[in-house]
Length: 188
Image 1 (spheres, rainbow, N blue to C red):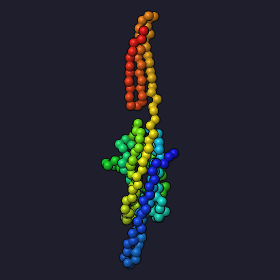
Image 2: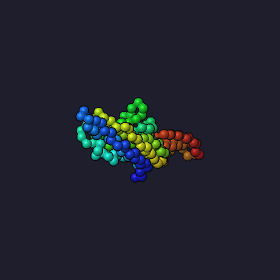
Image 3: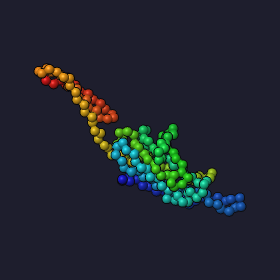
Image 4: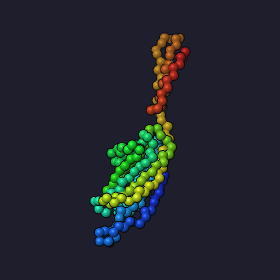
């Protein structure tokens, strides 16, 4: 497994708001986000690692959550969290919400069928503490998809004929799943 991208954006200090007695109360902490995708061969899924280095601070109680957005994947890509396939919104973004660090595990990205090359996308996170929300932090991720040659399927057939007669020879070559060619030749 080869990790292709790592980025960390340090958060500003937590905002403090006065309560009704004038005391300073902690505000919503910003997520410190890292994300990376494993290099894969064509037509395989890549593990997308999403982590928050300050998760212990972000998930202190039942009112805490982190919203994650995956933006910039090509049409035809599939994003799953465990066995659940996520659905892209109208902008092509995928969203998940975690209430613990474990809620960010098990995310995979499957590139579109027959895709090879690099997919550059972003992962963004926003921490929530009750009704308070942090600013959004983002990190770029590159998923590298290695080409893989598909094995062609060859089928040949000829009709039965008497000696010294000719028959049509049909040869069919199929390279699944994107092309099919048939050639016919006469043999003597």
